[in-house]
Length: 235
Ligand SMILES: Nc1nc2c(ncn2[C@@H]2O[C@H](COP(=O)(O)OP(=O)(O)OP(=O)(O)O)[C@@H](O)[C@H]2O)c(=O)[nH]1
Ligand SMILES: [Mg+2]
Image (cartoon, rainbow, N blue to C red; front, side):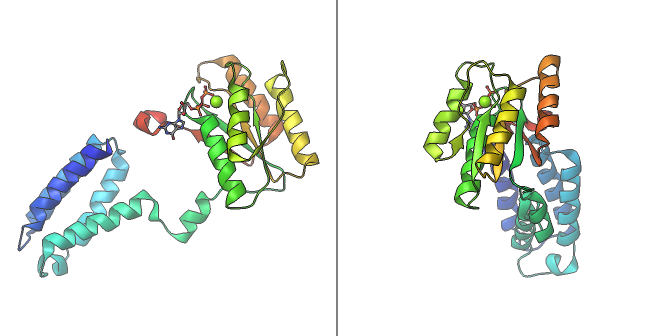
């Protein structure tokens, strides 16, 4: 997906670079091509519209068109806008993206479709929190359905050096949640990460279960894990 997007944008830019001067029509034509490239890469329409509008805004200005090297300048404008769109963001944006930390132990609930990467992401985030932010993290698997799911988290815990809640065979997700919160309190943990079983929104029993877990855990963060290749269907 990214390969085809960068190929297409590359072609647009190669054409531009050769141009000594640039008319408003050139900018329009370029905008159209970028628009198609982004839409084909499954970027949401409102995002594309905003993006094109702000590129056009900056590129059509007198300074660019009459400048020494307009083609290059437009390439730079597109580049800067792409960086901004992909999360450069302001300080306030970055602040908003940071994970919340309530009064310890803060419960984090990991949810998402089957096989979307919940367990892997649980371990990755736990490792980041413990290595970079020096937090004491406890991971607990609530996946009592898929064979070896709890074992999977335990192994990831050993690999990352993050503690996992000892597995008690036959315990239900709601009870595991209570035990995880209790252990986290007793053990002085900052964060307790609850890795749920994968589910489909049409599976009513499992949806009710995650609802009860949520009620008990009162998570400060509920993180939806989605496969990036799903595209906009994920939303
Ligand atoms: N390429 C790639 N593979 C990933 C990534 N995250 C997870 N995987 C793989 O995707 C598969 C499923 O990952 P899990 O973390 O077990 O997914 P899950 O959502 O916990 O799965 P269930 O608990 O069965 O619903 C595994 O083979 C992982 O190695 C990722 O970021 N990139
Ligand atoms: Mg899992």
